[in-house]
Length: 76
Image 1 (cartoon, rainbow, N blue to C red):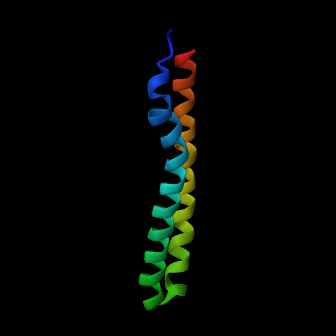
Image 2 (tube, rainbow, N blue to C red):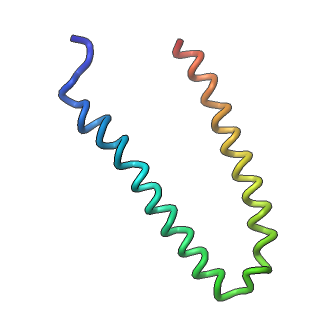
């Protein structure tokens, strides 16, 4: 009686299956756009910049994972 089964498919299952596909398509399009813009310029000129940006984005992903750990313990 606690679980509302009526909204399970449309509010949980479909978004869980569709969101990775939508994220992949958007990221793929964004990266293709970056590549098209950078192809016109010197790609080797921007390569060191992207290496530094990749380190920064990896740090932000690690930070986001660490911030979510506190919420797990509060839920328990």
